Amino acid sequence: MIPMKVSDVAAAVGGRLEKSDAGNNIVRRVSTDSRDIQAGDLFVAIRGPRYDGHDHIFEAAKKGAVACFCSKSHGGEPNPESGIARILVDDTVAALGRLAAHYRSRVIDQSTVVVAVTGSNGKTTTKCMIDHILGRRLNGKASPKSYNNSIGLPLTLLSADANDRFVASEIGTNAPGEISALASIAKPDVAVITSIGEAHLEKLGGLEGVAAEKASIFNHVRPGGLCVVNVDRPEIHPYVERIRSARLVTVGTEPWAKLQVTHRCSTIRGTTFELDGRFRIELPMPGSHHATNAAAAFAVARWFGLEPEEISEALKTFTPPDGRTRWIDAGGITIVDDAYNANPSSVCAAVKALQSPGARRRVFVLGDMLELGDAATDCYRRVIEEIAASTVDVVVTVGAQTLRAVDEARTSFTGKDLYTCGDVAAACGVLDSVVTAGDTVWVKASRSMGLGQVVAHLHNRWSPRSAAVA
Image 1 (cartoon, rainbow, N blue to C red):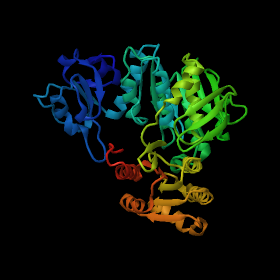
Image 2 (cartoon, rainbow, N blue to C red; image 1 turned 180 degrees about the vertical axis):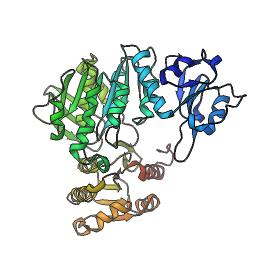
Image 3 (tube, one colour; image 1 turned 135 degrees about the vertical axis):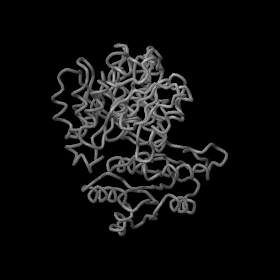
Image 4 (cartoon, rainbow, N blue to C red; image 1 turned 135 degrees about the horizontal axis):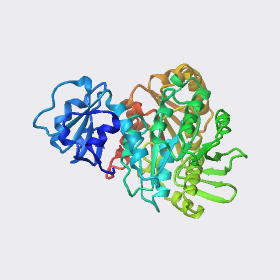
C-alpha cells in the first residue's frame, strides 16, 4: 500500500476521527484480521454472523495498528491505553469499499493497470494465469485466493504500491447488482468475462440473468480500456454488441471469435490447443475447457505488450491454485483437486476431462452443487445424464442433493460402481476401500461441501511422506 495519513483515510470515507492528534500518523496497510495485524496497519472491524471485529480492536492496537474503522452503532469509549485512532463510520464494510475507491482513483499511479476478472467458471484460474504471465516481466499484485467480494476486492486494490504496473483482481456475485457495485470501486482498465454458466441461479434467475449480471462490469471499464469476453454462450452476445468506448477482444470456440480456440486435446495431465490459427498453447492442467481461460489471459498479456512466444512459454509453467483442476501425483494414484467450486457446466466439463487419455481407471467424486434455486432438479438431471453416459468407472457422491438425484436414476449407472455418502468422512472410508494403484480420482464439489478434506485424505494415504494437501 502507498502510505496515507490517518486524517486522509478518515476524509476519504467520510468518517469521524476521534483522536485528532493522531491525524498525521501513517497507515501502511489495511487488514480485517486482528490475528494478522502489523505495525502501521488500519484495522477494519467487521461484524459477522459468528464474530465481531470490534471485540478485537484493543488486540489490534497492541500489535501496532494505528487506526481502525469502527461502527458508530458499536458505541463505547476507546481504551485509553490502546493508542489507536478510531474512525467512526456507519458501516465498516462500506467504508472499506469507499477507501478502496478513493485509493484506486486518487492514490494509485495512473500507469497501474487494474484488471478485473468475472465469470461463472474460471475466474480464479484466469486471474492466476494473467498474474503468472505478466509477473515474468512486470511488477504487480494479484488477489490472494478468490478475494472477489465486498471485502476481498477492496483489500486487493489497497495492496497495490507505487511500483506495481498491474493489479489482477476478481469480481464475484451471487445476487443482482453485486458486480456493478464492485466494478464501480475497481474502475478496471481491463475487464474479462470467462464464461456464462448455471451459477448462483437461485438469485440470478437463469442464464439471461447471469449474462446481464456479468456484463454489468462493462459499464465501469475506463474509456480506452479493454474488454475480453468468452462468446461461446449466446446469452452474452447482446451485451458484447453494445461495447463502444473500450477495445473488444472476443475469445472462444466460435468461428467468429477474434481469438478462436481450435484443435483442443486433453490428457489427464495437460491440455494443448491452437489459438488464432497461429499459436500452439500447452497447459499443464487437464480439461479442454481451460483453453478459453488461457485465451483470455493471452489477450490481456498482448494488451500489455508481451509477445505471443513469451506468453506461450509462460503458460507452459502455469500451476493452478488448489481446488481448481490441479493434478497431484500422489505416488500410486493421480488426484485432480477440483473441489473449490461446482455448477452444472463445470461438472460436465470435469466429467469430459476425466475421460481423457492417461487414466487406468477413472473415479469421480461429486459433492452437492449449491445455489441452483428452482433450476436444481433440471441441473442435477443434466449432470447425472452426463456421468451415466461417460466412461467413468467409479462414482462416489457426497451430500443429500446429489444422493436424491442419483436415487432417481440409479438404473442409468449400469456398468459403473456407484457409492453414495452422506458426508466427507463416509466418502473417505469408501475411497479407502475402492481406490487402487493407477487410478485417477477427480474430486468436484461446491466449496462449502468440504471435499478438500477428501483430497488431503487421499494424498496422505497414498503419499504418507509428502506434505498434506489442504
